Length: 425
Figure (tube, rainbow, N blue to C red):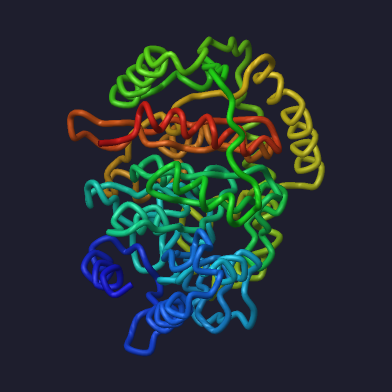
């Protein structure tokens, strides 16, 4: 714990990953670590608990009793919850040691983390580039940690998987409802998920099994499908090279059956439906801030723009979008007919530069970063982002594995096989 707190002190000023660090001589991190040391020294049975003593970072939209929970916004800088989120109680019950609360794109409404509390969250591979969002601080805390670490993030359209992909770590959004969002600032209750970030897939499996009671479901030579068109067009050169190289490596391993999945239509209407649902529900929750001249001025422009669209959305348009969503929940599983999982790039571009994004957060960059992640919030399917091995020192790229609802264990099993072939060195 001492080593990691010192590490955070070294990088946080430059990367802006934490809003609150539980440090200090009598801080929560040290007192909790001493408590765990004492329990282990007494030789109690819980010493075998898988997450006993594992450091954890927690996105700052997740309630932690007695500590500020800003939701990445100046509007909540003085908000201190009196209770823990359910996930926090689970983590503490499992023996985790909390390091602090991680920074995020304001109100969790953004994929760049440039509109974050105290300034942009910066990429661990290149400080001039974005971390991705909205769980940018969570991904950076994992990427730059010196020890095995777990982080908790929220994911409404890719907010765990996107920063994981752009920062070179693993990010898992389980099936909707599997990890409770009780005690988490809502963005869109219809779409919100909680997710996990770790350095490796085996660590992800361990954390998932401990927190949910589920685990990897082994299967020989799983059948994987690569959906074309909508999910692969517009890849930048680095993503395309890494993705195609990864597919060749997976085929060459003999561990998988891999085929193409023909996508016969443009799924952009599902993307629009998700955006309408998210912004309308977010505007309902944050309406007091949006309609207050004083509070509204404290909100970043891109967040105000998206929320403003939500305020203008009528009930008929919202209900129509919910109907479109119902159509996608039936359509998405059909892509998996005869398959165990889909694989695709997590993001279609590498992390752009902060200076190129600021003021343009709602433009084309947002679309290219979101496209392959957001639809699986609309359907609630489990999806896991795995970093791809790099050989030339270029920016991180990632592969996304998507499975059927409730088949999280199979997704993890497939991801572990992929990790063994593609794991970064």
